[in-house]
Amino acid sequence: MTFHSISEFLAMGHHGPYVWSAYGITALVLIINIVMPRLAHRRYLQSEARRLRREMNP
Image (cartoon, rainbow, N blue to C red; front, side):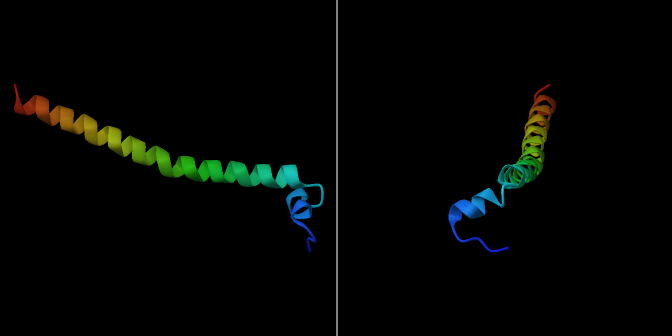
């Protein structure tokens, strides 16, 4: 499939909304799969630091 202009490329033969929403959802899921574990790891490290401080200061 060849496209003669940017607007044809974005329209994707009238399937543009489906194609671009699928790409958008995929990108969103990939970003969530990267960000959420990092946030969970940060929360875990903070909770462990608090726990260690409590144990060091009885």
